[in-house]
Image (tube, rainbow, N blue to C red; front, side, top):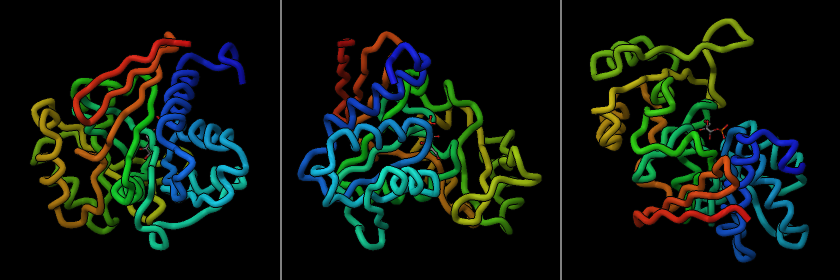
Length: 252
Ligand SMILES: O=C(CO)[C@H](O)[C@H](O)COP(=O)(O)O
């Protein structure tokens, strides 16, 4: 699809995804992790554009139902992390990324599998449009930190989250179903908005929330990404790296 038929936001997602694939999915890479969300289809598009020969011996590991479907419908070979515990490169979206590449993830309720697939990867790369590029988490993404919980513990975890700094924490409700969102793992999700004070050092908040019994995984990805690619509205790409460098690639 040409740029003129894509919205600015969609074009920005595509730009980030294409640039990240071009720079990080190399011919020698055999096991590739595919994240979830609306930016990731562009990752798969670009990988397909590398051609049949490049992809014939590759295995693609999904982070949930949506990415599994993407991989299968693209005709790529599906694998799982139990067969491939070391992944060459994983590319995933994010709900927000801070100045140190810490991310909020789980807007699509996939963050447990996303974190496993990111942690298994030798290189974890984030792709997003410009709205996700922040100094501090919680600046633009306000629903809060997604917390996956086992269903029977949700009431207890919700009340603890309220006392440790997220007074407005709430169970995520489904839109086209009565009742809560149920994850690919059969769990519930609580969205916990923490104050700026908690988001300045998200690894501390991550540890605190993860220690609550009943919590399966927290949508704070701290010190995991090697680089984050943000497509900008003017056609440029901002690349933030984990060595603190920031590169601006001008629009072609
Ligand atoms: O964490 C995620 C799903 O759990 C997604 O990666 C995140 O929500 C970003 O999605 P999008 O690319 O649609 O903005």
